[in-house]
Image (cartoon, rainbow, N blue to C red; front, side):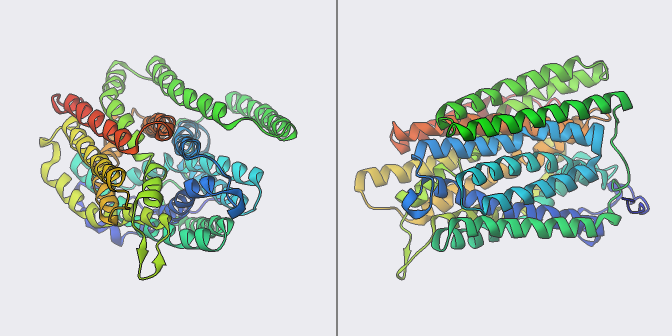
Length: 490
């Protein structure tokens, strides 16, 4: 198909107000694309743990809390992990526009699979959603950054904060819609609502393509024709092997879930380390660029712990909502999934404040110290939940929902540090032609964290919940002391 013509390049980002983005057509296109993707993502995320732990008599999978938490962590980890090949495809094969388009289509297909009431369709859909997310997410911030050329560090962080704020409208509504349908009508109807939302996202993205500067451009560093042909052949062989493997597993009645989750968790640990080593050894980077990639480790390591905690918002936090939170209001039992809307609600309310904050402090507050603040916020969130779980253990009665809401509030503050600041720092440190892959590296940290968090979440079956939560709170405080004492390398 013929790509739309390019619009004139926007003025230099350094001379524009951050708020002027709201008047730009390109901003509304990217905003609506991510808005609908977040609607489907948060909507499905709100149901995943609850559906997995629901007994078969209620249409669920009947998993234990620990196994379902590990599955949830694996899904979040896989979504982040897929950002590495997704970023590479954007850089070398598809370009950002097509990578985002194909990613959105795959996400929609995955949600439609999950709308079918079979276990095979559920896991197939989960796999497709993770793959599509990995293709869309690392390329979207690269295109976003391309639309603001010349912006300095403070403006870039403020712009990402505003973008975070904008997409939370649908993230707020997603769990309310899918949660009501899934918990009170049918689980798969809730998953189907997420599919419809993503379909709207695809349609408006195609409609708004003429406003995107990257719509007609190809990859930044395209593969040679010979390398492209080799890639196609390998992809074909891989697809055949994957289909054969899937057919074999289905024929023998499936594999035990816990060993599979453990193997995937190990992959989440090995792949980021391998990718770091491979990127540092590439001949395309000069000495200065390698130094910046090495310095990025100081961003990567604290991110792992934060995303390990963040990756439990839909599992351990959902467990707390279901088992330890008073949910009866005037005779109506509030669905446990609705509490997932607290996270985007707080993001929507606080993102303008953090955008203003990054403009005010600029480089006066080094990146390492910003991350320390984010880790302390996450520690407070887990500490509050630990205190609430301890009260339930001692008194037996569920606690007020304000305990859970306070925990979501502190975790949101942490994300508003690690999200916008992490994306901005990654964009600044990216060598020329490696932007999407560096974004993939950012998401690899999240993949490693979510994978580890999912594996550790199985401990909720063998240790008191308050002890488990308090352990993470202490670890986050200790980790925060390390970057707080260093100046940022970037």
